[in-house]
Length: 253
Image (tube, rainbow, N blue to C red):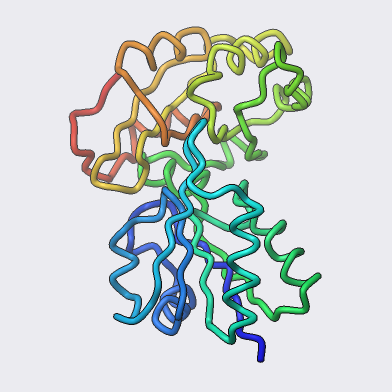
């Protein structure tokens, strides 16, 4: 008898930003496969008998490769268990949730996708930056930032991105110089404001601001590391007016 798989978005970091539906899934789960950026506090909602399986991925260090995750999901569900695949942010935003859903469909295993709040919206909000604003930004894009042209992995349409008012780059700290230079090359003003939000929505949140021309050096100077979100656009300047979240360290500028 087949079980059921819930592909759940854990939200951006603050455990209170988990959805009610996500909480319900955690409470009934027999098995929980969770990622590196999932706040550990969320696991306290699991029942005592639940099996917890860490599936964290770091650059160059994958605890479980994706195919192994697929195998475990299928195996546990076919044992009749209630399985939660818990992912940071939203499972369909750079989370491989669609790949896992497709595999489950191929195996005729029933599943549900539970959306989560993605960092591309939540981290800027906690930093006092709206991703859209009627005076500063009518268009918004979420982009993966780790492709490198010299490795033949840069598939982004930079000329189109340079025309978008606000762009959020995920997984981009190690590639920030290429990102900034590409946007400038394709017409973005080098003075365009940029914010980098480290550990967004958590007690460890830090925010630095700069411009496309300075942000690579700003990141190096302040030793910003992953997980961080890079936000490019005039909306960044609104942080000075509406920042509300008390960051652990004094604002870095």
